[in-house]
Length: 127
Image: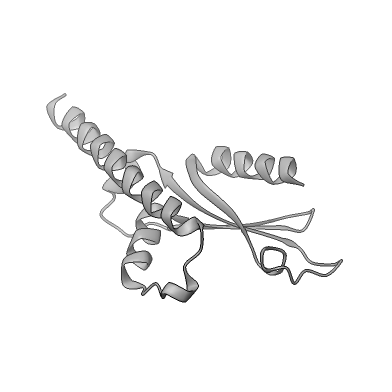
């Protein structure tokens, strides 16, 4: 199933012209409560090409797609994820082993994205 999920993630990247930064299994299977008829729930965080972030109007910042093999994919643009992350309160008892990895990923990605957007803006302004 892992290969199929990775294939679906690559299809979503190609279809929506995005780069998936982080994907995780969620839902009943992730919590150990699955039944034989449970679907596969995958959540992911992604970024668009730098130009996408220059739109004045709000852009759709979520992707949801259900595949015929009962794989339910749902993703948030990094900007949306960071906005929601900032407004949330993480309780110590709910902290998971993924939190430190996710924090580092978000920090590294935001720095890289800011550099890319800044460089793209400079190129567009001075060409």
